[in-house]
Length: 113
Length: 111
Image (cartoon, rainbow over all chains, first blue to last red; front, side):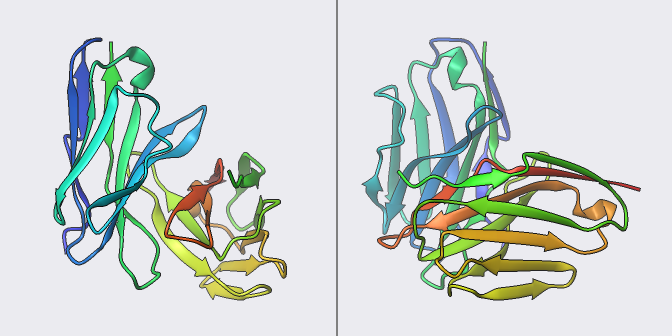
């Protein structure tokens, strides 16, 4: 099993540009989570899906952020337009019904200049 | 919002010493998980504790869930440089699958 796969690993973009982060969860996992990690705020849950349906998006900072999960094997997190304060490491994680916790991807380090 | 507070925020010890990391909340969780994160990687699950008062051991690591299921501790015996990393506790709400993470404890074990 290749684990949770995120792309790209690093992204540097200019303020105002659109950024799309991608995630492929572990096959068979029915829950997918997007987190953001910064030194100041730690790991923050942005949104999570159960069976491809968004359940809780209360952590999404503002309307510039959107997430989709068109099928069980793919999710995207989009920021448009991006701002320097969006700079952080964005993690995707998935979990199944076996209560074995989350499996995290390696993250995408986003820098907005 | 259920908050988890970890202490200390940073711990630096010599190889062979013991250490304890604490995770506290005013809320009750259905389960509590501990993760370790290394630089440039995502957190990796170490253990899940579910029952109040539960103690789990993973080699030199001992995890305890408080009787009231509001707090937990991680104890490392005879720490090694390979134990260096960011340790995160995370509580699962009773309803649903959502985890709330603590702020983390950064552990440095010097050889």
